[in-house]
Image (cartoon, rainbow, N blue to C red; front, side, top):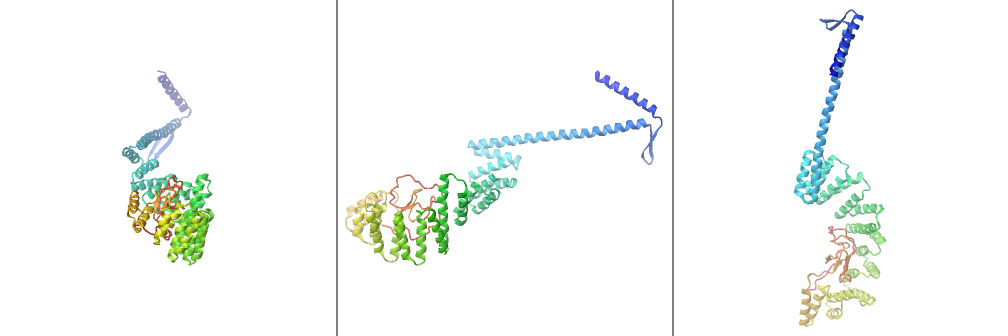
Length: 466
């Protein structure tokens, strides 16, 4: 009722004002809308008409603005609801994966990506699931899509590198890690992964360069010790590779560099000896290897000297070396065994029998020992004793002659190498019998890496006993 009265009052006031001002402003104004159309209006009517047109225009502008605002709110609400639905699908997918409902998780992530193909976190999760399932091609495709959406995302590049490595596309993985390092040059994860890939590909010079960078980082002490050990190994491998490629002078520098970093690093000493042998400086090589043995007491050095002297037709020299070593350490069963094995190899049956029959403490480690003893008893026509030794040999689970074992992973090998083929650590292969065989391994645990090269064929299991 009040609104009606106010409306009537305003209309009446408007009519009064219009009449009042029209009487004050008599006359007419001609308004042409075209050359042939003309209107005669009073001045007051023209003013009122102009005001009405302005009001209509303002009302239309406000109405259009309000309409756009309503439409915008509707679209935002729709997008928000869509995002909430996608978020819920993604969240349910992560929960399903955590609950080991992999198939359900894949379906949920795929539904989320159907609604938003550029959602990075869903692409990441789904790609990781496919990689875990062994479907590297699909994982690579998803993580490449994520990378196109956000090409500077370190997490995406790291996962893509994991996919490529899993698919054995090592060069592509290296390129991806290189992109990461362009974005973050000091990213430790990328540096470590790139170094490990370079080691896998035996690109030792590049791996050594990265390892120097890693050692400059502020690593905790245990990690620094492992990094230093790895630096020594990479330095040695650069030298070994140079020696294989016919650059002994450059190789010598790297071997000496490895020794400077670790005075007990046996492969580098053997590498220097190998350079001298290839240069025809055999006597000098022998002297160096003898000095290394005096320093390290490593039977591996004696094995190298054994092959060297036998190749030169000087078995008496290596016998003398073994005998001198036994004089300095008369209770060492390993020295006794390998001297006896040398006698056996040289067909010195009586000498071999005399020394091997007195050896104690290694019978439970070496099937080789019982094979040799069985052969010696056979040659002495002592058949019962030979049968006993053969039975002992047959009780061993491993029947192959294995003279070397890695102290880090206890992997056995018929050939010595500067680096264990199983665990990838350096300077860990020792000759059996190993006195600490029953103790837990204490080497560097770096995971399984393929090691293809055996650098010096002169150190190997040179013969079978039976």
